[in-house]
Image 1 (spheres, helix red, strand yellow):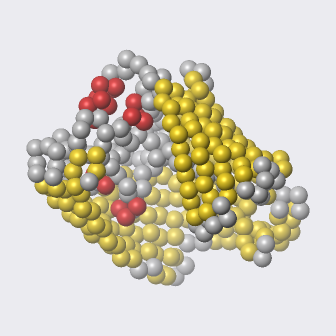
Image 2 (tube, rainbow, N blue to C red):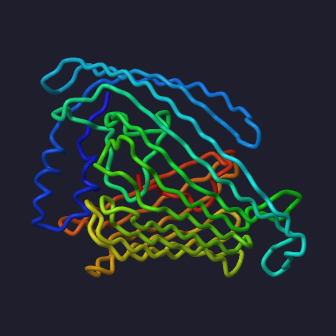
Amino acid sequence: MRNSRGIASKASSALLPGDPRLSQISRLLDDRGFARFHSYHEFSLPTKAGHFNVVPRLGAGHSNYQAVQGPDDSIGRTHISANIDVSTKFNKLLPNFNSDKWGIDGARHIIEPYSSLSWLSTNELDSSFGRIDRLTPTTRPRQRQVGRFTAVDDLQDWSILRLGMRNRLVTRRDSGMHDWLTMDTYFDAFIEDPELDRDFSNLYNDIRWNPVPWLELDLETQFPVSTTDNFTEVASSMRFMPDDDFEFKVGYRHLNNHPVLRDSDRIVLETFTRLNDYWGIGTHHRLELVDSTLELQQYNIHYDFDSFVGSAGFFIRNNRNQDEHGIMFNFGIKEIPSLSLPIKIGAQ
């Protein structure tokens, strides 16, 4: 059983007092609920066609809504999808590319052009249906695989072709291979756009440079290639460890002319101080420069319980129209490969 009260509060925090969209968000917060059964299954068959890797996928699923708070008592939807991914690789060995200072022990440049065609056909929910797991405004491209699409109630027909190219500079490290520098450049061509009347998405560039364990740089940019999706975003971050017991991450994000989200110049600062083998302290601050608002303050204390890790803390969020205060408790099993201190709190 799902209920939507409180889910849209994050959207209202992005609007200034007096914005006419606040009343619409308030209507979205009205009580609504349903019991939903959702199942989706997909089959794939990776194959090799000459120099090309081809991965076709075929999937089908069903969503059934019962005990709906609205004009209908029950609703059923059937989803049918098909995908085909095609890629190839070219590489060049750079044996004389070496630097002890920057962690390079020989290198290989790998170029991977790729394309992906995704198609989905489904029954559309009536516009009056009170969606709970629905899409929220974002600057990033949507997930195109139904099995990983979390906004189940907002599944709509789509036909999308993605064209891109990955560049990787790989070096030897710790008896294995390490991605020293990566760049992924891509865009989407919409045969049928599920959200807006677009022909093309922005041109995306995702760059990551991780030369040594104590330094990591990320840069995500997107620029318009058509007049129907003409906003610009530049998001950068740097993680740096001046010593073994302290690390910080600073980020800057510029957003201009987005059709839903307001213009933004945002700075984010995260820190983590390791007190000993078990205890650590983390902070997170987010400052919006456009109106000089400290949007978020977050303070956590972390503890390593050997087999799992945990943290406790509190946050203060400035929503402009109303401040929000809260406390957090988080636990995670250390056997999860991607889990470490400090524990990250996602924005979803």
